[in-house]
Length: 454
Image (cartoon, rainbow, N blue to C red; front, side, top):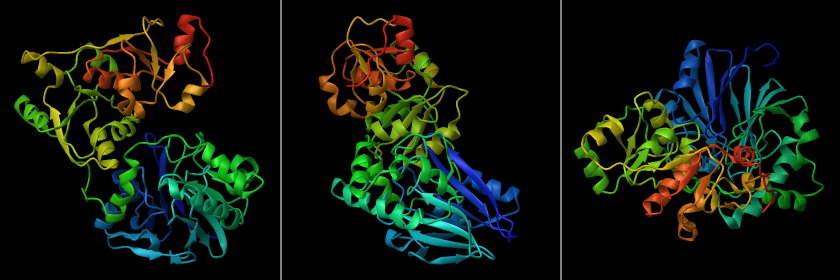
């Protein structure tokens, strides 16, 4: 990172499942600041230790709706939490308003009020003397896009969109074209209004290429932004308040307890959710009746947060080689605190006890004896779907499940979301068939071109 002599290092830590980036900035005097840290701060802490740095500040751009902040974890290790005064954090922190500065020993971090994505949103300009070094834009400016403004309430969506237009025009586009921009949200984030493979950008690149910055006026910006909004996981509605109050400090990733059959039975009878996180092939071959299939992968956490209530104990079924720490990290990262444990021995224990096992048809054949249900996002469906398929987003399936036809073949992009949908249908006594692949595979195997639109 270019400066006038102060040694500055920057490391980005990307959460591929949530599509977010956190940053560790070494500021040259043995200290570092962490921007928008995730709940599990292990990677940031280890990176700081490897460079001989102490994380002195945990800096928040806004109250996050999509992940639990790790600022309190870092505070427990000695860091000072820095956040907008208007965020009204309920725990110890250093509050900032527009124009406030942090002296970083030769460098300065300036808070820039950029409301829009959220009302309290701050971007941060890192300066070496008067020279701008980097902008940490949170959700105010993303590569090719901006973050959505509809996560607070329908009544505030348009006022926030207008505030974001002014934030961009008056506060961000006034910065130098060659200034590097490091956003929090990126491709794959439900906070983003458009997917992009780029994680960072510059002011000049966005001025030249970002379609939302090319609009002629504020009204057009608001209309274009509204057109880009899709649905988002239900857990988004509660995490802002979790982050405002301050989440529980775990001090790391706790182990997942091993449960015997009697304990699993007791928990299920008390209302626990049984989640089978094995591969879709393993689930299809044999699973505990009534269990919910959510295959463990980077996107696991988004679908957990969309279809599973957060107030129930969670019991998991896993295979031997799966990463328990990753599962716990993901679940805690969006505020699932009641992780009761996993069935010891997994499905083998269930079978050995003579318990009934259910199966789901998983097919790679592009043929359907009944209707085809495509559970991808509406934007994905419009880009291309199997001929005659009905689109219904997985996140909407529970509310519309009574309108789904019987004996459907369910499909998505690869099969994982489809298996989750099939497991939800199975709970209602309506077995479904899952296509092991996506629309392109279906078109190739069937010889039928994809339909678009609708």
